Length: 119
Image (tube, rainbow, N blue to C red):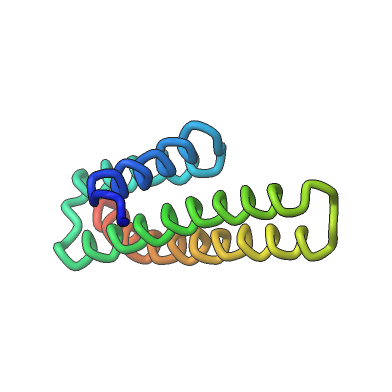
């Protein structure tokens, strides 16, 4: 029998909370998300720019949570050091890095023109 939908949401929120509590990198991503949001209001970015920022927030945060899940499963399945365990963890971390890098590039493309208008 399936569990109630509310219980599924509770488990999902537990995963988010655990990741935020235990992982340093998601804290960095969340700080950047808050700063981008503050600067978005300061510079009155457009509706389309907000949509792009929100999409990038969701992408980077979701990948960070997935990375944490992959690391936990790998650690459970293979507590000793193994080349395939390292590869899985490195690839998951690499996915977050790629998304964060391009989010930063896109963020600069959005915000630099607004900053240049002030100069």
